[in-house]
Length: 225
Image 1: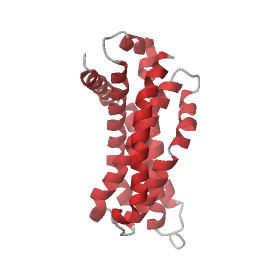
Image 2 (image 1 turned 135 degrees about the vertical axis):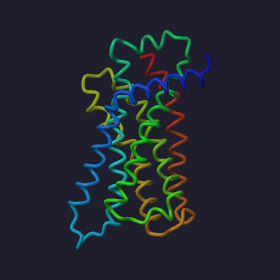
Image 3 (image 1 turned 180 degrees about the horizontal axis):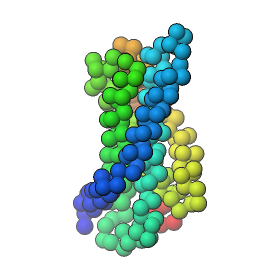
Image 4 (image 1 turned 45 degrees about the horizontal axis):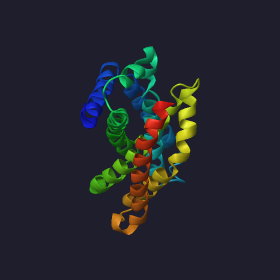
């Protein structure tokens, strides 16, 4: 079985399970709405403009809402030792990473796609003229986030406190893409062009390449452990 075909089957399986249960998606969406609302109503509109707080609120929402889904990435395989069954199939080990990566990317992308209009509704920021550029920034930061999250989720799934360990391990690795995402979002909302802030974009791009490559290589070591 080819790596691409096996990865496709694994990703479709995870997406189909989430489509039926909608457990992680519903909890992530509720969490996203809650975070956006709390951060919006906690500010003093006479002291802090919505434009000043909006970029940070957007990325905090994306990060913590997506973690709820990444926490569940391997929990299904832990039950009834399903991962052992997957490892016994002819599927290459690399296919498991790419399948999980694709499913997690779809989940996080769905959360972001719904959270973005809610973000505009709460903060009334002019994102539509810069939507294409903003989506590029979000996509690049999300790739790094999901790659590292998929690897760490596989590492902590067998630990006693997997739900607690994943955020503790993941957050330090998210500093470059999150800081870059906030800076780029703030600049775009302020009317600047990506060519003027290309340094942050290059940083996220380099982190994407490094995180995806290292996660794909180290994932097979994690499976062997």
